[in-house]
Length: 119
Length: 119
DNA sequence: CTTACATATCGAATAATATCAATCTAATAG
DNA sequence: CTATTAGATTGATATTATTCGATATGTAAG
Image 1: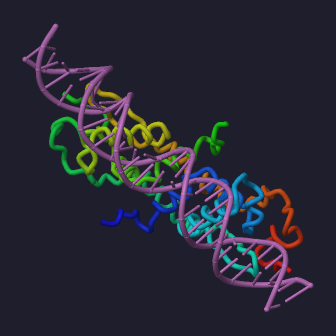
Image 2 (image 1 turned 60 degrees about the vertical axis):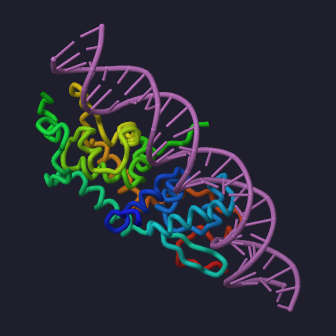
Image 3 (image 1 turned 120 degrees about the vertical axis):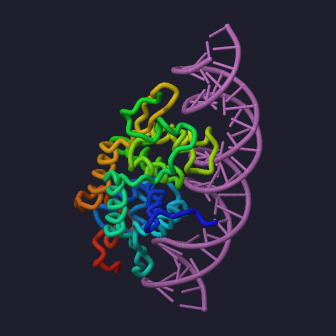
């Protein structure tokens, strides 16, 4: 019943990155760790909203958090980003493994390379 | 008023990839071009739904479409994927450019590297 | 021209996300 | 202990995405 997650749950990361605010936060963190108060200043959002976004980012693994006294420090987790990169990179290596069941309706024509004409 | 797009509109691609169905479609296409009818067979969705997803994928640039008679052929656009990869990769190169305005409230403490203690 | 088939679009229903004000918790300072 | 400050959580609401049935469009075949 669970949604089929891509290996290593890359989908979660992609979801985390698919929002302007969060992508901007990732950009900020790419320059080094920051505490929530600093991140908050860069955006026109309220503190609860930032907290919500940081939760999604940390849950995706892309960002790790560490408490230092009252402050939360957020760090970009490069190894998880690398994993995502690896996953996406692998999509570009044409695997030539027919993941598609042979077609039923347009059998003799579809499912070939683009040069094949449909009768 | 427009949402600020990341360079080259990578956000659109990330949004396109942030859905299980679409990510699965991309996976299918990574093995080679396919027509809509073939893609449709791999999923438990209706034809209009597939059409909707293909629209998002092509609008993001990640997939290009070509009509051959009645059939639509969809092809993974590797160069656009490469662009996205490049964008994400660049996030891992610590730029050391302070994109954050110097903090106002926790001035003397936050906004430093993680080793700095907040007094 | 009519039919059949592949895909796209429309409109409406539903589900998932994002946002905020209010409140809570944890940590430090006094 | 009390007050203060940084963040998290909650509940309500607004916004956006996803999905489908119905229908439209485009293409080829008869």
